[in-house]
Length: 234
Image (tube, rainbow, N blue to C red; front, side):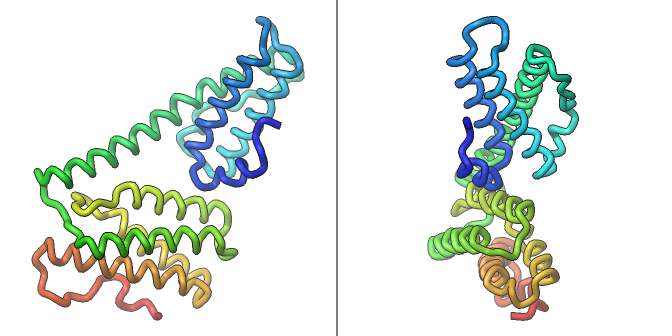
């Protein structure tokens, strides 16, 4: 098998980046195995493993942007099926790369806008910034080890935290990603009640820090209560 069980389990942490790795690793393997212009059994088996895994990932994590690419129906012909599977992997690869590039560009622009100070920005204290980083790490550990969340839900939460941590800087022009966690907290409370307390408590503390920073930037009166979370039971 080209892909280990450990790798397959890790796909939930970042499905899009994992798809890129699957295609790249498969391409590397095929360069070693496919010595002729026609397909033989060994490279076909490698391709079939990758193709099957990619289709499962797209379906399992409901990756909408890749659903426009038609999944080939295999007919039992080694040559035709191999060509069809290879074309499918070739087609999804640039879409995944473009998606990652778009996210990276957005994160980089956010970083530069905040650092350059050329636009309105929210500025965290060093202590608050360090605490938010710590809370994100604790949330990631809590989610990874929790049995409350389904795999798809867990993957979405981990992806949100990854994006949030990539955006986090002392100066930020946009803090919307933080407030998305409030919705996650509400869902967790609605689904799991008190069992979600360790998860919700960390989000509460993080949003308190963010709200304090936002209030200061917007020149609100000191002590203005945090919206949305004030009615959440501890």
